[in-house]
Structure formats: structure tokens, C-alpha cells
Amino acid sequence: MIPKFVLGVCLAVLMVLTGVSTYLYIGTRQSKLAAAPLKPTAAQPTPRGFQLPGTLFVAQNGALYSLSSGRYRQLTPEAG
Image 1 (cartoon, rainbow, N blue to C red):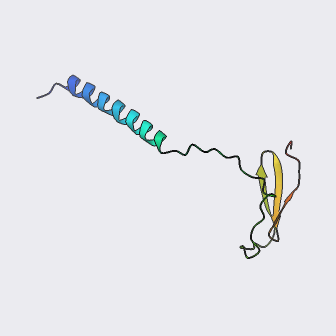
Image 2 (tube, rainbow, N blue to C red):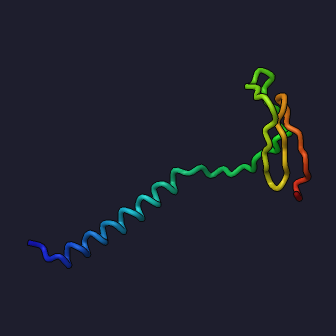
Image 3 (cartoon, rainbow, N blue to C red):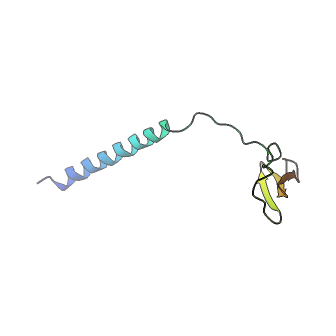
């Protein structure tokens, strides 16, 4: 039989190695490109896009935008 202390140490080492290797593997799978999102007013939805009744309000970088009738409109400046 393996003493409980040795088994505990082996399992702790195995958990640390598994965690570190998983972290490193997932880190290699991420994209290196980091593009800032466009303002909603820069790209309009397609004319045949899904139309919602009413108005949808969106916040980005401190600015408020509204989406109604398939068009985005900026309501407040980016400073808020």
C-alpha cells in the first residue's frame, strides 16, 4: 500500500501540472488579433435584416445608441 501522505503529494503535483498545462494550451489557442469594435453607426444592418418593433438601446464606450427601423443613431457623445 502507498502511504496516504505520498498519495496526497502525488495527487497535488498531478493537479498542479494538469492545471498549468491546460492554462498554457488554452493560451496558445487564443487569437493574437485584438481589434477594437466599430461604432454601431459605422456599419448599418442590411436592408433585409430582421426588423424589431420598437427601439433597442445599446451602450458602448459611454455613448448611447438607439436601433429603430434598421438604423443606429447616436444619442449621447462618448464622454457620456
